Image 1 (tube, rainbow, N blue to C red):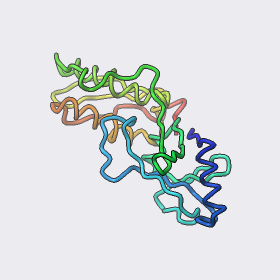
Image 2: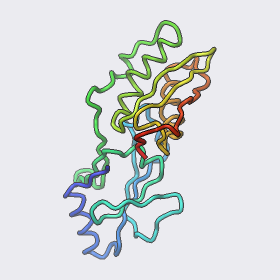
Image 3: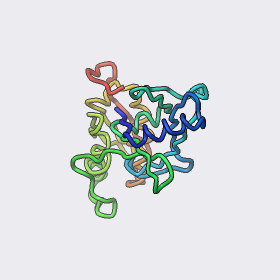
Amino acid sequence: MIQLTDRARVKIQSLVDADVVRDPALRIALAEGDKPRSPLERQYDISLVEREDKQRTEIAINLEGIRVLLNLDTSNLLSGATIDFAEEDGGFRVETPRPKSAPRPASAVTLNGPLAERVQQVLDELVNPQIAAHGGAVELMDVADSTIYVRMTGGCQGCSASAATLRMGVERMVKDEIPDVTEVVDITDHNAGENPYY
């Protein structure tokens, strides 16, 4: 669930009172050129638009009377995030929750040993702490040549955003850290998911 701070609500109301917008919606999209190693490093473009300006590719959620417009990729990444307004920055900003056990910085991750051990290390130290906020995890099931086979569990199993999580999150992080990996194959039985996040 996304939270909106009181400061953000006050700012939105002040813009309505000043006739900048009549029926506001807060649009949150990934910033152009955003390519972080982790969802915690994402950059967002946040703008206040008219509610009627909703695009076909966006979903609308209601946060206690404030309409927020998101794409599927941003809705997946913003779970648990707080939207605030910072006068010093001159705009709205996203504060993403930090996992309870934060991953070590990339410079501290030492990848060595057989491919399976290196992949497992990336999953344990970079991937799983990020998706733990959704109650999910990724397990390494097998390695064949340069292809790894993974299973998504918890909130990821059966989640409608699991394919995006796999391709834009898991696969990207694994391949960035271990160029030897050429393909990531999901062998999850998503129909058996008991508690999907979305």
